[in-house]
Every structure is written in structure tokens, then in C-alpha cells.
Length: 359
Ligand code: NAD
Image 1 (tube, rainbow, N blue to C red):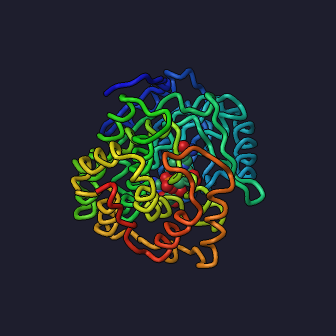
Image 2 (cartoon, rainbow, N blue to C red):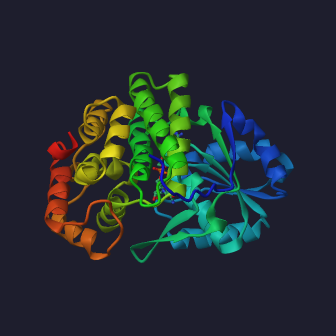
């Protein structure tokens, strides 16, 4: 049954396909840009420079030091580079870290962004940026942060190693999973969520089997876009809060943390969200949504234990304390004992707790 809801469409132009990078110059012109600063990580600098050549007279320079978790000192250096080359727009080419830097610059200057994502993180679809200073990560939501234009080019994702495609893809699935039981969920976002999960759950095993499977890469990028829209449109809950806490406190890698925690966070919420569980099960083709997501991660060869990505065992209690310290909305009330249990299972790499109520 459809009840009352509010749905806000975020204003972002999307160009999707193969070879779409070729439209970057026209898209910068469309934004009224005359001098574009290209942003990349050090690993993608060469790719950024070749994009610069394609931009021709619109290319103002490159800043190739984008860093995970958007450290404020890196943003300040990028701001200085922007001023030095008199840039009037930025073109971010890369994963969530590079997108984050473009967003941090837009937040400070109002500059237009053309974003060209090369992972499945989904950040390009959200008006949110998480920034780190003195070891603390804080999140800002502001309309100025949302990129004006996004070019999805499947060709750029072909170089994403299968292992990164797997964890980045499950990171995207996590946005859609929590969108299905968000406090402000709505039928349109839920449609995108279910379709996004379905597309990624089908594409990721095919990519793992054959990394240059173009059809699967296309479907995965399409799914990642839909999941990114979910993240930008509705509020997240326990899973995202836990990953934020774990990543920030123990300096854990972003996408891998999401991949490990998701089945456990979902199993925790399962009794409170039977409709979401049914839709996720249908989308991934599994009898139980959380067990199915755990199996998917294993099948993709992803790590399934927080201890294997650097979390100390002594951190389990600290994480459980932090998870219930700052109250936030979640479909199932936050119970420290049960949350500690889910973190302990995720730490050890055990399957998620099986929930009879959800079966
Ligand atoms: P990333 O951007 O850190 O990329 C990981 C590495 O992969 C980098 O070295 C990058 O250069 C490389 N890489 C990227 N694309 C590649 C490709 N196609 N081929 C080969 N190598 C490639 O990782 P990520 O998971 O995309 O992003 C994580 C960051 O994004 C975190 O800081 C996270 O907080 C942020 N994020 C923010 C939001 C938001 O809405 N604000 C959403 C999701 C993620």
C-alpha cells in the first residue's frame, strides 16, 4: 500500500554510456566553464592529464593529490592551486576520494563541478561531503556540494581491478539497502534501490569471472548510479553510521568496511523491516537477504572479517559504545548488546546472525 511521502529530485545532469568521456569538453562549456582544474589521485594523474589535453583551451591545470576521507589540508592546497591557475570550474576524475575533493572545493567557493566517477562509490549523486581534520571526520550536507553534471563512462571502469569492483559495488548496494528502510523512504527511491541492487548483484559475479565483460561493467555502473541517487535522496541508518565510526576510529578502508558490515547490519534490522528484506531477497535472488549478501561477498572473493582489514579485537567494545552514543534514527532501536554481537561477528568473519522472524 502506498502511504504519504515526500520526494525531492536532486538537480544533476547525467550523461551515461561508453565513450562519453569524449563529451567532457562540451559539458564544461555547457556549464559556462572557461578554465577547468582537473582533479585526480596520484594513481590517476596520467589519465587526468590526457583528459586535460582533450579539454583543449579549457584546461587550466591539474591537482593530482586527492586523498581518502578528504583531509582539510589537502583541500587547502587544492584551493591554492585553483587560485594559481584562475580556475572557474573543476573536473573530478576518479573514485569517491576525488569526488570528495571537488565537493569540498565547491562547498568553499560555489564553483561548478563536472564529475567523472571511475568507481561505484556513488558520492557524485549526493550533496554530502565527509571531511577529516585532526583525525575527526565530519559530514556536511549543502546544495552547493552536489555536482552539476556527471559523466558515467563505462570504459573508465574497465581498469577497476575485480577486487575493487567487488567491494565498491557492495558499498553501492549498501546505499540502496538502507534506502529501502529509510525513515523518509518513498516509492520512487525504493524502485531505484531495488533495481540498483539487482543490477549490481547480477553484474559483480560476471565481472569477477571476466574483468573485461563490458556488458557486466555497464550494468554495474548503471546500478551504482541508481544506488548513488538513493544515498543522495533519503537518510541512512545503522549500517552507514557503523561504517563511519569504524572507518574513522580504526582507519579502515571505506569500501571493504562496508562490504564486511552490510550483512550483519541488515540482519540486525531484519525483524523491523520485512518489506525491505523481501525486496532485497528478490533483487539478489536469495532466500534470505543478509545471508545472501554474505554469500555474494564470499563468492566475489572479498574479505569478510574486520580483523583482516586492520581492526583490533579490543576495538569491538569501543565501537559498540560509539554506535549507541550519538542517537540517530534506525528502524530497530539501538541495543548495545546486540550491536556488540554484530560487530563481534563481523570482526571474526562469521555469517550474519540468522533471524527466524525474517525467514
Ligand atoms: P577511492 O576514490 O579512494 O579510490 C581507491 C583507489 O582506486 C584510488 O587509488 C583510485 O585512484 C583508484 N581508482 C579509482 N578508479 C579506478 C579505476 N577505474 N581503475 C583503477 N584504479 C582506480 O575509493 P572509493 O571507494 O571510490 O571512495 C572512497 C571515498 O569516498 C571515502 O572517502 C568515502 O568516505 C567517500 N564517499 C563519499 C560519499 C558521499 O556521499 N559523500 C559516498 C561514497 C563514498
